[in-house]
Length: 92
Image (cartoon, rainbow, N blue to C red; front, side):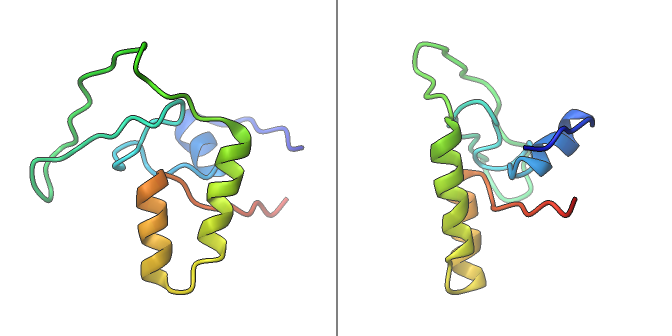
């Protein structure tokens, strides 16, 4: 266990989450943020709390481990985009 004191973007990065404007950029749920075209801003609307599936720690760890076992860089990027997270190794 690590004690971490930082701002929200740094904390999200240490937790293995992708940037806030990723396809699945929410660190609390699995909501997708589609884009109209490449380079466009994501659509952050449509939050309905009754329909949101929350993220859970164990599932997060298992999916992050998938990025470690990817055979190619393309596979790793596909998995990261699919789940909105990556495996993060902290050097403490």
